[in-house]
Image 1 (cartoon, rainbow, N blue to C red):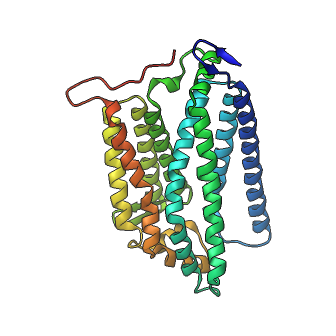
Image 2: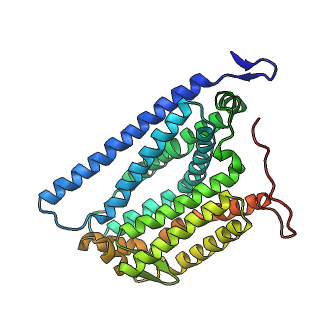
Image 3: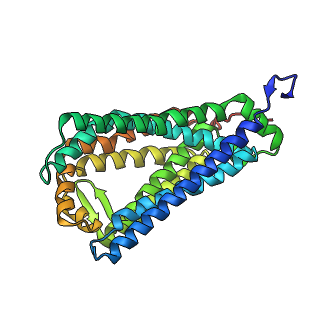
Length: 329
């Protein structure tokens, strides 16, 4: 079946509905997982385990955020909304990029984690460690690369785009800027959320060789979060100041992390997270590993390349207007 035989585009309403239902189901599973974590924490508290569980709270809120996103975008997919298609393209593209970087770093990171835990228990046999690495890489490859790549290819299809245009003819807010720029704005929002999670941990902020903790660290995290949100808004509005802010803030974040991770006083981070003595010792050994430092910095490399690539959409210093992609008909 075709929507318009003259243009050769096929109706993809069935695929949009089917994926939307699956996406909503995935969101419901995330809600169930978050509820399970909450139940486990309550059970631990009642059993007399008094050490702080603040380090788990950001994970719970992150799972809840994923649930909301999947349910919201799944509903938009069922209704063939333009904004849902555009956001799925951006989210899946970001997920694939970060997933590929994760695949490149996770084997070495797992080795570093095993080394950090070896002092507290017998190390895993080499064969067992290999199985753990293969299983982890396989899971990441499926859930962070393979599935998002398939979704990316589907929602980016001209047939899907045309289906959404016909069923949702009015221009959407996502049509205001090119998809690569929209994706950069979304990634800036994700970076802001990451800083907000550190504030939830009691305030931990890497500051050029040391860690700011407590109220000062929380205030710095909140300011950093606000700056990322501002950058996301200005990028979405195609403001040249937004592009320069994104470049400068990403560079400062990379420099600060490089000078702090593995060199700063990690005991302050441990105190802020409220870890028990055994977990604190293992975390300290892991923090001293160069692998962790490079793993934390690895996600900034594609961000710099991305920022450089979308520069063409933000005009020029001579005052030329930003390069705009035509809005869908």
